[in-house]
Length: 203
Image (cartoon, rainbow, N blue to C red; front, side, top):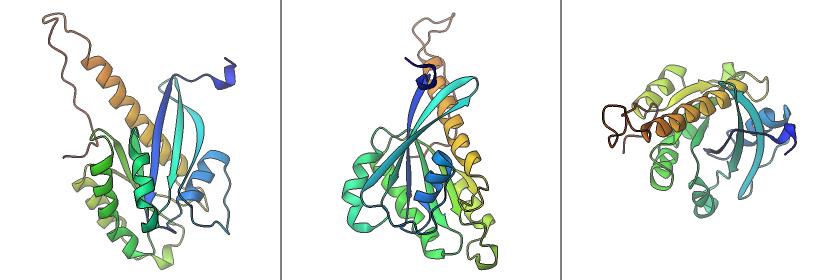
Protein backbone atom coordinates (compact mmCIF):
# COMPACT_ATOMS: atom_id res chain seq x y z
CA UNK A 1 0.00 0.00 0.00
CA UNK A 2 1.36 3.43 -0.87
CA UNK A 3 2.43 5.53 2.11
CA UNK A 4 -0.06 8.25 1.24
CA UNK A 5 -2.92 5.73 1.39
CA UNK A 6 -1.98 4.27 4.75
CA UNK A 7 -4.42 4.69 7.63
CA UNK A 8 -4.94 3.04 11.01
CA UNK A 9 -8.68 3.59 11.33
CA UNK A 10 -11.60 4.23 8.96
CA UNK A 11 -14.51 6.11 10.50
CA UNK A 12 -17.82 6.86 8.82
CA UNK A 13 -19.32 10.27 9.65
CA UNK A 14 -22.65 11.69 8.51
CA UNK A 15 -23.65 15.34 8.06
CA UNK A 16 -27.31 16.04 8.79
CA UNK A 17 -29.54 19.08 9.00
CA UNK A 18 -32.06 21.08 7.02
CA UNK A 19 -31.47 22.03 3.41
CA UNK A 20 -29.50 25.25 3.09
CA UNK A 21 -27.64 25.15 6.40
CA UNK A 22 -24.29 24.72 4.63
CA UNK A 23 -23.49 21.03 4.94
CA UNK A 24 -21.98 20.71 1.47
CA UNK A 25 -19.79 23.77 1.85
CA UNK A 26 -18.63 22.64 5.30
CA UNK A 27 -17.60 19.32 3.77
CA UNK A 28 -15.97 21.01 0.79
CA UNK A 29 -14.01 23.32 3.08
CA UNK A 30 -12.79 20.41 5.18
CA UNK A 31 -11.90 18.11 2.28
CA UNK A 32 -10.58 20.53 -0.37
CA UNK A 33 -10.46 23.90 1.43
CA UNK A 34 -12.98 25.24 -1.09
CA UNK A 35 -16.19 27.25 -0.78
CA UNK A 36 -18.81 27.53 -3.52
CA UNK A 37 -20.99 30.65 -3.34
CA UNK A 38 -23.45 29.01 -5.76
CA UNK A 39 -23.67 25.68 -4.00
CA UNK A 40 -26.91 23.80 -4.69
CA UNK A 41 -28.87 21.46 -2.44
CA UNK A 42 -27.54 17.92 -2.24
CA UNK A 43 -29.63 15.34 -4.08
CA UNK A 44 -29.67 12.07 -2.17
CA UNK A 45 -26.25 11.46 -0.60
CA UNK A 46 -22.68 12.42 -1.47
CA UNK A 47 -19.48 11.47 0.28
CA UNK A 48 -15.78 12.37 0.39
CA UNK A 49 -12.75 11.26 2.37
CA UNK A 50 -9.79 12.83 4.10
CA UNK A 51 -7.11 11.41 6.39
CA UNK A 52 -5.93 13.27 9.49
CA UNK A 53 -3.73 12.39 12.46
CA UNK A 54 -5.19 11.89 15.94
CA UNK A 55 -2.97 10.73 18.82
CA UNK A 56 -0.28 9.69 16.32
CA UNK A 57 -2.79 7.50 14.46
CA UNK A 58 -3.81 8.13 10.87
CA UNK A 59 -7.60 8.27 10.72
CA UNK A 60 -9.45 8.22 7.42
CA UNK A 61 -12.76 10.04 7.67
CA UNK A 62 -15.43 8.91 5.23
CA UNK A 63 -17.89 11.81 5.40
CA UNK A 64 -21.41 11.41 4.03
CA UNK A 65 -23.33 14.58 3.15
CA UNK A 66 -27.05 13.81 3.34
CA UNK A 67 -29.85 15.74 1.66
CA UNK A 68 -31.92 17.92 3.96
CA UNK A 69 -35.17 17.87 2.02
CA UNK A 70 -37.99 15.80 3.50
CA UNK A 71 -38.55 13.86 0.27
CA UNK A 72 -35.09 12.26 0.61
CA UNK A 73 -35.48 11.17 4.23
CA UNK A 74 -36.27 7.54 3.37
CA UNK A 75 -33.07 7.34 1.32
CA UNK A 76 -30.71 9.18 3.63
CA UNK A 77 -31.85 7.37 6.80
CA UNK A 78 -30.22 4.19 5.50
CA UNK A 79 -26.83 5.91 5.41
CA UNK A 80 -26.85 6.45 9.17
CA UNK A 81 -26.21 2.76 9.64
CA UNK A 82 -22.56 2.07 10.30
CA UNK A 83 -21.82 5.71 11.11
CA UNK A 84 -19.74 6.26 14.25
CA UNK A 85 -19.92 10.06 14.14
CA UNK A 86 -22.45 12.73 13.19
CA UNK A 87 -22.38 16.48 12.67
CA UNK A 88 -25.84 18.02 13.04
CA UNK A 89 -25.99 21.46 11.43
CA UNK A 90 -28.28 24.43 11.76
CA UNK A 91 -28.02 27.98 10.39
CA UNK A 92 -27.46 30.56 13.17
CA UNK A 93 -29.49 33.07 11.13
CA UNK A 94 -32.48 30.75 10.64
CA UNK A 95 -34.26 29.71 13.87
CA UNK A 96 -36.42 27.10 12.14
CA UNK A 97 -33.32 25.10 11.23
CA UNK A 98 -32.37 25.04 14.90
CA UNK A 99 -35.85 23.98 15.97
CA UNK A 100 -35.70 21.15 13.42
CA UNK A 101 -32.50 19.81 14.97
CA UNK A 102 -34.78 17.89 17.34
CA UNK A 103 -36.08 15.90 14.35
CA UNK A 104 -32.55 15.14 13.19
CA UNK A 105 -31.62 13.97 16.69
CA UNK A 106 -34.62 11.67 16.62
CA UNK A 107 -33.57 10.26 13.24
CA UNK A 108 -30.13 9.47 14.60
CA UNK A 109 -31.65 7.74 17.60
CA UNK A 110 -33.86 5.64 15.32
CA UNK A 111 -31.32 4.71 12.65
CA UNK A 112 -27.78 5.12 14.03
CA UNK A 113 -25.78 3.39 16.73
CA UNK A 114 -26.48 4.57 20.30
CA UNK A 115 -22.71 5.00 20.66
CA UNK A 116 -22.41 7.56 17.88
CA UNK A 117 -20.25 10.62 18.68
CA UNK A 118 -22.28 13.72 17.88
CA UNK A 119 -21.44 17.38 17.41
CA UNK A 120 -24.06 20.12 17.09
CA UNK A 121 -22.86 22.84 14.71
CA UNK A 122 -24.18 26.37 14.37
CA UNK A 123 -23.01 27.22 10.86
CA UNK A 124 -22.74 30.61 9.12
CA UNK A 125 -21.36 32.21 12.28
CA UNK A 126 -19.73 34.87 10.11
CA UNK A 127 -23.19 36.43 9.65
CA UNK A 128 -23.21 37.83 13.17
CA UNK A 129 -25.45 40.80 12.38
CA UNK A 130 -28.17 38.41 11.20
CA UNK A 131 -27.90 36.00 14.12
CA UNK A 132 -31.22 34.56 15.33
CA UNK A 133 -30.00 31.67 17.51
CA UNK A 134 -27.73 32.39 20.47
CA UNK A 135 -24.70 30.23 21.16
CA UNK A 136 -25.87 29.87 24.77
CA UNK A 137 -29.23 28.41 23.73
CA UNK A 138 -27.61 25.96 21.32
CA UNK A 139 -24.94 24.94 23.84
CA UNK A 140 -27.64 24.20 26.41
CA UNK A 141 -29.57 22.06 23.92
CA UNK A 142 -26.39 20.16 23.01
CA UNK A 143 -25.60 19.48 26.67
CA UNK A 144 -29.14 18.22 27.32
CA UNK A 145 -28.78 15.75 24.44
CA UNK A 146 -25.25 14.54 25.14
CA UNK A 147 -23.67 16.35 22.21
CA UNK A 148 -20.63 18.53 21.76
CA UNK A 149 -21.19 22.02 20.34
CA UNK A 150 -19.32 24.45 18.07
CA UNK A 151 -20.15 27.38 15.82
CA UNK A 152 -18.49 27.36 12.42
CA UNK A 153 -18.20 29.32 9.22
CA UNK A 154 -17.51 27.41 6.03
CA UNK A 155 -17.03 30.81 4.35
CA UNK A 156 -14.17 32.10 6.51
CA UNK A 157 -13.04 28.61 7.68
CA UNK A 158 -13.69 29.35 11.37
CA UNK A 159 -13.73 26.13 13.45
CA UNK A 160 -14.22 23.88 10.41
CA UNK A 161 -11.05 21.90 11.08
CA UNK A 162 -11.78 21.85 14.82
CA UNK A 163 -15.29 20.50 14.25
CA UNK A 164 -14.20 17.45 12.30
CA UNK A 165 -11.14 16.81 14.47
CA UNK A 166 -13.28 17.00 17.63
CA UNK A 167 -15.65 14.34 16.34
CA UNK A 168 -12.86 12.11 15.03
CA UNK A 169 -10.98 12.39 18.31
CA UNK A 170 -14.10 11.48 20.26
CA UNK A 171 -14.73 8.50 17.99
CA UNK A 172 -11.13 7.39 18.44
CA UNK A 173 -11.48 7.47 22.23
CA UNK A 174 -14.79 5.60 22.10
CA UNK A 175 -13.45 2.91 19.77
CA UNK A 176 -10.21 2.41 21.73
CA UNK A 177 -12.23 2.27 24.97
CA UNK A 178 -14.30 -0.53 23.47
CA UNK A 179 -11.08 -2.37 22.65
CA UNK A 180 -9.85 -1.98 26.23
CA UNK A 181 -13.20 -3.21 27.55
CA UNK A 182 -12.72 -6.45 25.65
CA UNK A 183 -9.36 -7.09 27.35
CA UNK A 184 -9.52 -9.24 30.54
CA UNK A 185 -8.31 -7.72 33.82
CA UNK A 186 -5.45 -9.36 35.70
CA UNK A 187 -7.66 -10.03 38.74
CA UNK A 188 -10.67 -11.35 36.82
CA UNK A 189 -9.86 -12.88 33.40
CA UNK A 190 -13.53 -13.20 32.45
CA UNK A 191 -14.68 -9.74 33.56
CA UNK A 192 -14.14 -6.88 31.09
CA UNK A 193 -12.99 -3.47 32.27
CA UNK A 194 -15.70 -0.83 32.54
CA UNK A 195 -14.98 2.39 30.68
CA UNK A 196 -16.94 5.63 30.59
CA UNK A 197 -17.90 6.81 27.10
CA UNK A 198 -18.65 10.50 26.53
CA UNK A 199 -21.11 12.29 24.27
CA UNK A 200 -23.42 9.32 23.80
CA UNK A 201 -27.13 9.54 23.22
CA UNK A 202 -29.09 8.48 26.30
CA UNK A 203 -31.62 6.14 24.77
